[in-house]
Image 1 (cartoon, rainbow, N blue to C red):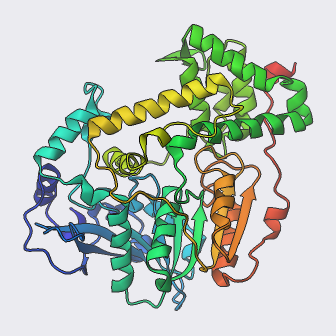
Image 2 (cartoon, helix red, strand yellow):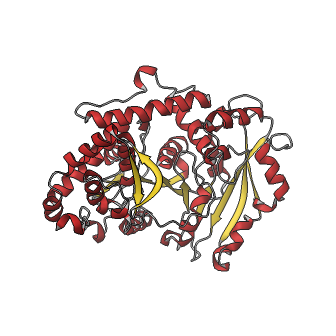
Length: 487
């Protein structure tokens, strides 16, 4: 098991809160690295250092009955230097930093800088775990209630797993590290953590890099319709500005909404290369599928052909086969804890007055899109009620203002953390560089090589313009035209 613990103890800790000694002051306890890491090449394994970050369950005056032990990894740089390391804050919410270990081991950013990674409370290898194995079992229809009852029976207090507690864990980590400062990189929801950490411990942070920024106090749940509408508009407009795309798909917007209307009236069976895959799709589900696909930079060039396929009544994934969507290097371990996701997202959303919880800024959005977004939001709040998540006692109501040098990376097609949120964050970060990638969806560092070049330049000197030649030549996607449609 992780860090030298026996497998038996690890399995026990998944079933009940482990019996610990009386709570201790926050500390770092070095341990062996996960046994699974021994499957890596020796050169990678030699670069890993692992530990527990031991922190109290509560910090608000309540008595903690045990310590939380959070999995802490450090990837040593390939070249020994005294450069400030990168502290990686994962997204989600509910993602484990350790799930991205392979990416960071290979990253060029680790050539001269150590990479520090922490699995937040309830995620990954940290424990107590909020893992919900019921979520992946087809025979458990109401996994939220089933998992919530099981976790409640263990005595887990979900108020210990909200974003203020997680930010405080990072503050403790920064105070315990024997380092003057670190460079903080936050991706997606991790950027929200990064901004709140910068607000809590600015003296410990040399620079901020925010990839797909989710800035306080913006709320994904309330703005999901507007954000998706803007991403779809970008796709339709870029196709109309591309000669071949416009000629082949002259009415892409109308084709999309006609497909939605037809699927609302009559759901259809999905196929792959003409073979049924055992799933049907409704109009609302088609809209949500498009939202998911727009996240993936490699998929965007194929989306006009995919929409046209559905518009012609061919509900097949074939137009996407040449993209990287069907390639996966997942190791089978859960990257995101669905229960940690619900705990953190619901605690923030439920802290907002009820009149402000649902869709906002909906003027001019197509009714079909609004209906799909409303279904998502209503389902989210139904899950929150079933999960019985505690609302934050202090709502997140103000933007983070900071002088820390900041790099903001946004994708023009991102329906989750749109470029307008990057601009919102930039308006409150006095020393910032904001790059909007015209061909990208969600998450720049792992999908656009140019983003790494810009990040390297930024880390070298956060106060100097990190613009790279590669960014200047970037253009909207080169759309892939379906041979059948162009004939």
